[in-house]
Image 1 (spheres, rainbow over the protein chains, first blue to last red):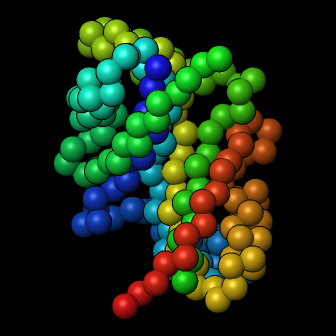
Image 2 (image 1 turned 30 degrees about the horizontal axis):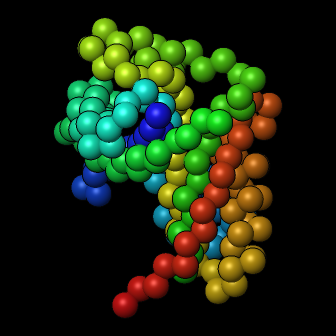
Image 3 (image 1 turned 135 degrees about the vertical axis):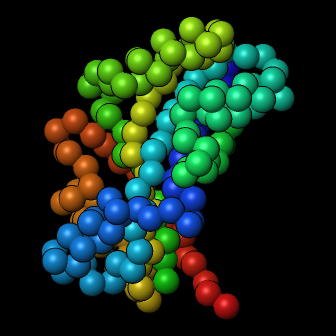
Length: 85
Length: 85
């Protein structure tokens, strides 16, 4: 069993209007120290694989095929071995 | 400068229909090893603080006040000291 934690964020060149709105709201709420905000997506996927390399390859494949928009978004995957007692 | 990485997920008792839809789609795409999928939100916030404890307290405060719905969602914060050259 593996747990893939997948973080999807906009590419740096892409405008993130939602992040800008959140930053403005935080400033209005007197959180003045906030400098930048980006909003992304976060997925946790459990996979019933035995082999780590295969699990990683699959995670990359389905992330690129379904979870992200490759034109605007980029991703990071943390793959954890998850042991059940 | 600190970078707060904030992960927002549904509480375990809350139904996550979007995660279920993604799981079904992955099965149709022959990613048969996928067992569970949850979708959440991911924020990266840079903060211009000197003090780590103060930065952490602020991050908790604005996360609970703005970023999550406390009825349905829970969160984790990783606070990283970020040094600029």
